Image (cartoon, rainbow, N blue to C red; front, side):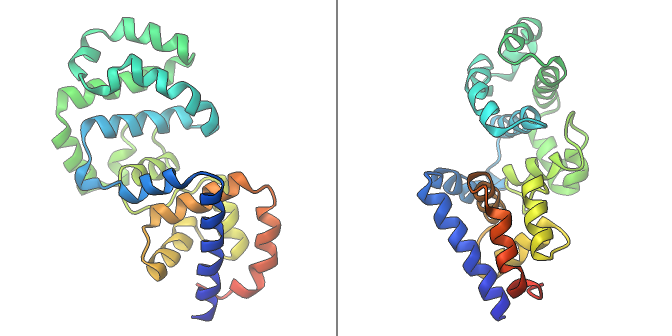
Length: 220
């Protein structure tokens, strides 16, 4: 229990650092995300973000996403997207020149329009990650990113979270985040976000992890 106390203490230090650096809005957003409240518009926005972010930094995506969002009218009218596929594709490619990713976003928007989001939401609820991986660009890693962003209880095994969990001695980011989540009664997704954002902000995070590793090696 003492080791878990230490782990929780380290987490709160990281969280305070992230908040002090001006990223409290991200934490608030992740705390509020709820799968039960998920709409077609929110799903498509999060799906599109994950597709664009695959293999790219969040800074790059943050710059282009508002423009893409505006071109697609905030996904408020999926019929409009279905009827204007080609012209929208051309416009989007001028903003983000990756035809495969842009096509994936448009195709998924049309799929949600034609199938109906309630059916898709039910499939996500019943089949989870396996169903998410049926969407273009959603693979073994990106499925966790999308899952947590739509309110499911998963941590994302990106390079930062993998390094952190390995350094501390956990077999996966999910195991690490779940332990902290259960102990402090905070969502797994929030724990994931805090640790990831901390890693992007502090270039010395791996050295700091080495310094505390000895006191946490038996936490799990």
